[in-house]
Length: 184
Image 1 (cartoon, rainbow, N blue to C red):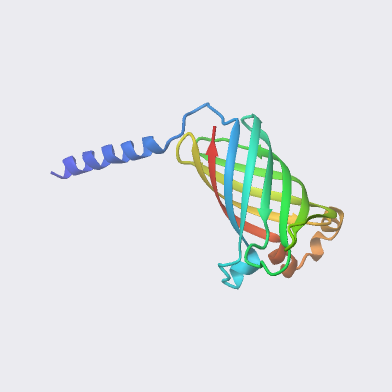
Image 2 (cartoon, rainbow, N blue to C red; image 1 turned 180 degrees about the horizontal axis):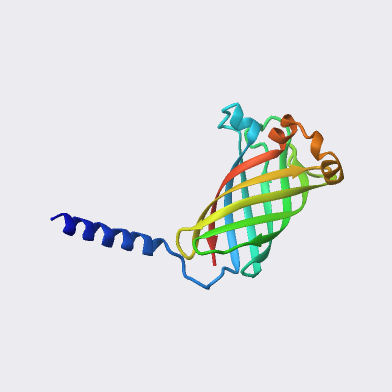
């Protein structure tokens, strides 16, 4: 009786895990992501209404390298003043190892605002973003991931003063996010 239960359990586990395994050696060319993130300082304050949604598209040139573009709505919970959007362009380096896929991305970003009169304004500064995360391939076309994103407005100042970075700055400029991604 015990052998029968163990055999059935092993068979069930094999069936479940085989359905979670993505198609091997078939990298995605196009990815569409929905990202729901929070600034670290909002998480520390347990302000879960202060989410930061994003949409991202990515084109993969080879299985380990791609280019992406995303729009992040920085303050959707603060609709009294201007709406702030960040348009980010990234180059992405991935390490596809089975169903686990770590990645790093970096590139420039641009700030736009939309005021209550529906007028878009470009903020004349170029910032930079750095993303680090990993994806779990649930199926060959659906992925669940976690990432961290650092937004830096002054790249030279950031690297010249790494030792002097304070916790407040990091909490205000670092986002953590849950990523839902569909791949083609």
